[in-house]
Length: 363
Image (cartoon, rainbow, N blue to C red; front, side):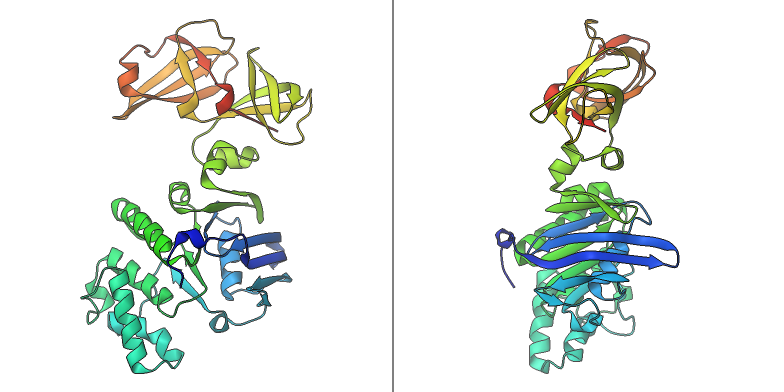
């Protein structure tokens, strides 16, 4: 095992090439081409039925593609059984053996691989130390908390030093506070080990918090794959913009395109400029994408984009505003509560400023 996250390389450890998977007449994964890079934390994110879990199961070997190939470290593993892929798998249910102690659970995959007893004991102790539970080896899983069981399940997946660890909603059964703690622990563990994690979730915050890259799935295809900050700030299309985080989408028409930038005119007559998705052309309909925290409220009514404040809600460190524009669009704004100090109230007429650097123009 490597010891550093810096070992993330540009060399794929796993590759999907033209992979299709259907159940009856229902296509789940369609022409999937995906590289998983050595040492990265890749999250597969998408709504239910989008193909993300099926993709993980095909990589694990629990499902076989109808066509296409899967390669791991240059070997074609498309039809290879799960036990012959040297991958660790962690499920939401943990799948720990209730009749075995924690140490016996961890030793089980090593015994299957016929490692000597002394080597099994050494690796079990090492994993218990790694998950910071050195004294629970003689307990049964039901004697542990949910968070501790989750750590043991992860340790069992890691104990035989797999080349890839696959995780399917492993934190789904935990409460919110413990889930957030375990997100940080998983991220820290990945950084220390430097092995490849492929992680499935429908939780956007989880994906944004933990991942090196995120692959957004929609209807069996990857809608966008990129670093979390780029997924959040520069969505490739309207689906990604609406699925990840909160988005304001203002209807407009393209009036100019130049050097990766587009200028549009909204239904209110406001002129807005932002980064443009490739292929936009003058005269086409488009939407202006912005995040609530990047929109600025002003009582200086010189902007063409104006509206009426319909609600102001206090959220501790920030205030949330809803503004109904003259063209009938609902805009959400987040502002620092200390900076606002009550200057805008429901019923006020306000102008909306969408700074050029914070907007993307999407088809």
